[in-house]
Image (cartoon, rainbow over all chains, first blue to last red; front, side, top):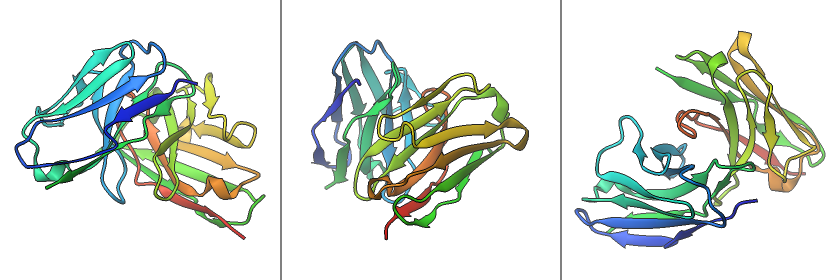
Length: 107
Length: 116
């Protein structure tokens, strides 16, 4: 199975900051990667698909990049509502696998 | 509004069975593949199973293979997960998710607790 790693595991940032989360796959997954945010007690929400495509309705301060094994989610101008845990997910091959998550707190 | 609503969760003893349902509304269910994803208490997300729009392609995670069965009834706009031989480690919130743009629409989840 393809292993997904994320870094950092957690971060604390201020409103207005630029935040970067990285995700690494154990093998080439082309651009078959998505990013989700989950708030406590809620279902995950899709932010980015195909590594860099912004899901409809998601603010443009979210962006994704990467291809192959290394991917990045960037939140520019961090907002108070951006707290939560962020997960990457590969759908290049079964079994689909999620990264372990990155918890984002607002200072 | 595109919506998914899970049901069927509950408390079950180890070795028992449970059938989860996911009812879709607001979109043409028969045109889309679907997924089940779960989250154990305090843990991350784990993909469980996928089914194509026509039932032709089905996949399972290693941890549930041979015990869980995914199915769908397009006439009822419903997705199912039959869970047998349940273990304590199957305790989780189970979400269904539509397979568009990876997974674009999610339900609120249903909680399964496996305990004696």
